[in-house]
Image (cartoon, rainbow, N blue to C red; front, side):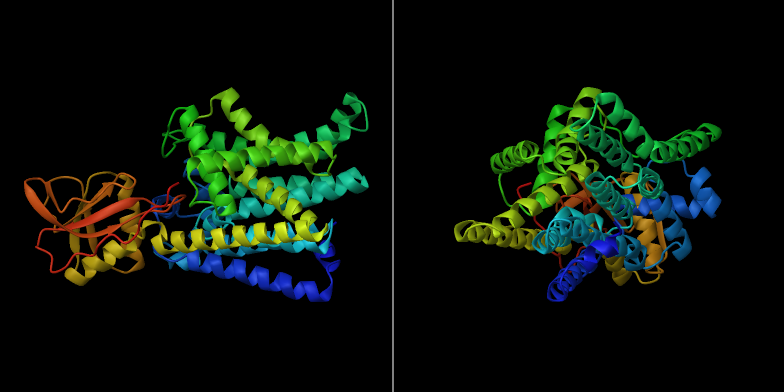
Length: 487
């Protein structure tokens, strides 16, 4: 069933509520999109500028930070375009994902549609990645649409071919948006196989699964063939931004941040997040026992992906955004649970209402805090330097990672900025800070003393901490107002 057909089943009065929820989600993403491009976004912009052409986006970048569809959008807008415009693709697709989530819920009832849509609209992790110039929001739109299509097919057992080609096309779009669509594709295949196995033999379930997933498998081979082929033909090979070996501590920390930012529980301590994780696991077990239509999807997405990371010792497993699949699965599971409470006795309806209000308030507070930080907002550094040296200036950096963000911010504000990492004369110094580390009042670079002028803090999911210093003694210093939460 198409998304529009699912939404058409929602009564007229409820559609006004859905429209308000979508408008809220859109507004939150607009607010969250303020500030300059942070390092990952900025490096994408720099790499796209070097690629110069649409063909170059596919064959010349050869970097894991190249999200094809987002790169094409950046190329179309041009280097130094307004950050809000660069993020508009994610804002649009992130907002549309709310409607798809509503359509998934509408297969059960209008209550399920509205509750699920609200959770997708306000979830801090979805607001964050639905408002930055990267490929995660378009990927999630393709992923949730594929979940909708497959869920409907498993219920109706409609002809296989249209579903197979639809899911294959969504897989292709999702992979071109962001390669972690691979996790979703594997999860959907496992969901289909395990669900069909409940009513047929293992052989029959396997054959049916292959028939549905065959176009998706071809899409995976095409995109990864393009990626690896272009890298093999280049002089540099496939490059990665950061590489951190697998560590259990990093994995569990990332899962904790994912859970906290999924349900707006960023103010809770670690032990409380662990308790929430146990409740989620209990919810998965309950869904399996009740033989709910999406039970096996929840199990594979929430349990299967972390288990796969552990078994294969996947590098960079300490990055929360790699767990967006479990995040949307948790939201769908929680949405079902709350809507079910509303359909029962008065005591359970009150419990459901209290839970929904708590999740809403927690999520809105978390989004507000993250939006205030603006992902570290490197534009603030360029604005300050332009105020102090309107004709242009030179800034010293300690590490390469800040260069792209400064270049993009300078281009956005049409400011003449030279960047150096050696001992050439520099009026300013930009110092990268460890997460939460204080900024020193005075730093020395190349025997020159720089006084602290400005500090910014990144968010829980995106952005970095930095401080700006000036050779001249400051007339005033802006204090650090951007404090981090407990997660």
